[in-house]
Length: 116
Length: 112
Image (cartoon, rainbow over all chains, first blue to last red; front, side, top):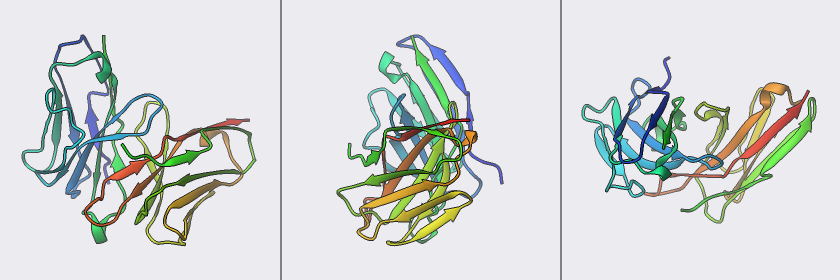
């Protein structure tokens, strides 16, 4: 079974530029998550999708971050415009349905973003 | 936001030694997860625990879901160099609050 795919793996941009990340979850996983991980910390949930609907985006800085999962499969996360403090690893994860079917979240390799 | 208390923050051990780390929370959790993260990679799920008192093994790893549902530990027996990495605990709450709450990680270094 293929894991969670993410691209690009690395991105360097200047502040105020825009950037987009792509994620393809494990086949059949209805729930998709985007996390931000700053060096030395645990992952912080930005947004959670159930199929193509948003379940939780309470920690997403909506003035600059946006995400979509139009067909309920792959997803994109965009930052526009980027700030220096956005430098982090952006992780995508997926899981089967919460409740009886939940068996944990499975992560992709992440995209390391550096904002100069 | 809410975080788990994970300890120790870091460990430096000799190859072959056993390792123990734990997480505690002020909240009750329905699920405890233990992850390992290598540099430049995403976290990898090691063990998932679903009920209080549950003790689960995965090779040299053993984890337990505390009986109070507010804590969990992870043990690694006979450590080897490839055990190096950062170990995270994560807990999932009950009811409508299903978001994972993460510990800050335990950094493990193994001296061959």
